[in-house]
Image (cartoon, rainbow, N blue to C red; front, side, top):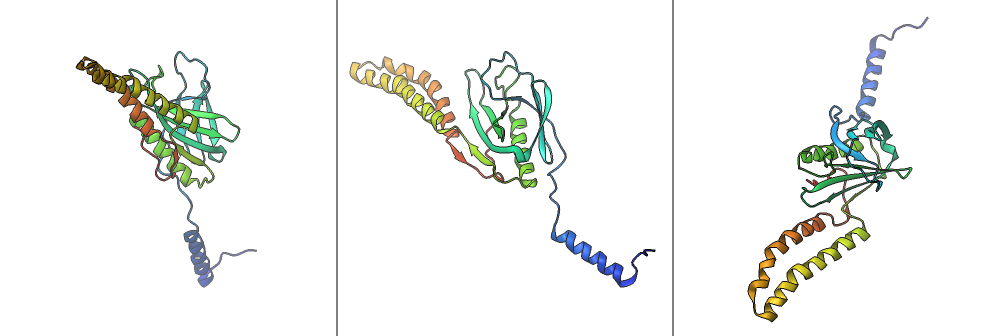
Length: 222
């Protein structure tokens, strides 16, 4: 019949167990789970009159999110790439976008927009908190091999820069040239309006220069 260990044997086993536990500490997720009230889409180009899928929760080893009006769960080990970028629309604040690509090719877009697809600035802090929480949990889960990128891809970046240069030539350089050639400063009256058009595009282009970042230092977009 087995007996309980006594004396020095019990002390030795206790110390040995303590040393093993100290040598291999478990990875604990940072803080309790939080649901972020952000809208999610699948990245497709289909027309949406109003967004309805709201809610995303980064967990210990995976994330839950609302998509197609039902909750979906994907494990962190299924993530192959995360891209952080911003976009802008007329009469809208800057929009933060977190694009998550999984091993099966599915892309999940979590953004700071409202139900109408525009940004009113209300969800900016919520979006920043989600991005920071997701990256902390990815590091705690020990997930490696994920590509962390910021900004636009090469083709989109080139298109944006070319559009910006065309706007500068049309709305700024051309009025200045006409004022110099014609000798009438009235052409310069368009420059303040031109600045209102060009400056947002310049800020957008600067904020979305393509590159990589470390998961322990994700860029703050908003």
